Image (cartoon, rainbow, N blue to C red; front, top):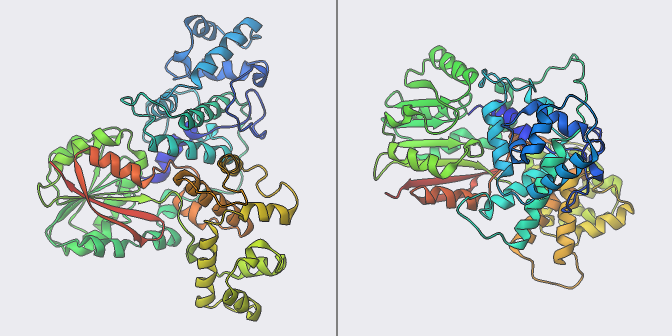
Length: 517
């Protein structure tokens, strides 16, 4: 699926923002507390949002009938104290609602307008006008990832562990605060125009991360194969696979985006790819097209997050794979990758930052002796490949360092280290509660290791700014499911994992499955 257009529709449901009734720029409280009613000001922004969204909006239909009736006839008047108390009580009930997030996601996919959903009459004409502060999106995406791994959004699961209950409470609080923010008028159009989908998705940095030719060689694409490239986008893998077919076989490049389909069809014709067929498919569920064919391989690269309900989707799709030899390959973004050289350009800024901070700087002190010696001998010319590799290896070792945060905080002697970064603040709170920063050595839980890795990556990327990873993969805006959750869900859909490669691509898991039945 063309990644950008899908993300624009998901962003509004993912976003969270300022406290109820506050201005857009104000940061929210990172809290798991119930609403007291004091957060919501005069409640007019919340009432306006819900009235505009209508009775189908998931928050609206969860309200009591008398509140819904009030919203139907609300025209900007003051919200009575009694009604404010009633709304607050309903919002507090929703804080424990396991399905609020998924229902909001579904609402935006179905009713938000856009080039791939032209029939919507949603009063918010552009989903981007409901995108909230990036810092809140990052925290919300983190919480969704953890809750999904616990199966909390699974309607068959009944028990919720205490930790997951607190995470759910925090997630829903962010959502409910976000839909109530005061919306500012859209900014006037400036001379800047955002890059097109094709420019982003086929950028050199992104292609260097995805390495299509390496993937095609790894998958052993052979002449004569029939392949479905699901969510082909602008042909990142479609055309390299077609080259491997050598005009013997067929690739069906499918996508929900009309722009992507048009591009694929035009390029296939202009470049002589006679065995590539571009096929538009429906947004939700398995398109009937797939059921009309039997494939040697189905490739789903970077589309798992766009599939609404993966287990039934892949279960139904399974029957389109050739029994015995047919393979499903999923290329899935790594939620917390280690660093690679792709992120730091020519490394000159990294070295200048280390030099400016000095030898007392905690990061500098934790570099290996040979790295420090090489830094001292560097004279501002091109950074040698060996030094670049040493720095990356040292940075990756720091991702598991339990004392890095405290040492950096002491060095800076202020709170600016994570100021305004809500995910980092959340991670610090959780790690302190688990005792991960304690001086004495304590065992660290799997979740603690994950939290520590994420926190230290944030710290290092704030000190040595890099956007290459998040910009190329759009990781700030996407829900990234843990690899273990992907394997669990696809296995439940009737597949057997036959290959799991985390080394082939620096920022992706490459998972290969066969039909189990």
